[in-house]
Length: 160
Image (cartoon, rainbow, N blue to C red):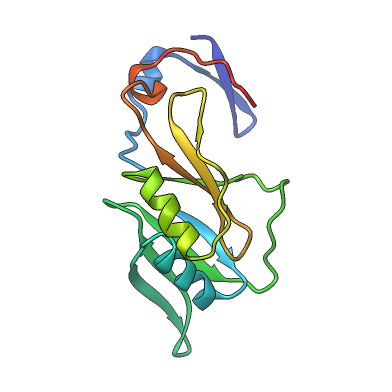
């Protein structure tokens, strides 16, 4: 491997040896989003995606944010920020939630009167559909298959 990372104005060569001594990430702990209206956002994530509140953040006796359980030890963190707006120029483009059954998830989401894209089999042999939360945050709903590249590897030709 002959790649370089830019850190503190010094180039550090990434080698097999120093990758093996790197920290070991267990999983994504949380994704943080800003909400124009935290309670509208809470209702969306609870009713549409079935995520329960783990706890609230309070300031001066009022809720200004919360954590939602997203399976295992992963969470969605939400904070009030009235001036927040989504832009395609943001560094984080979307978040992806793995679901057990995409067809059932899509039926539930449609029953909540939320727009959802058609189900698509992606080039990595996963199924996906997309929604947006009330703040414009794009959410990919994702179902793995037995042939998903995430498990069996192999380069895939992008079809987008």
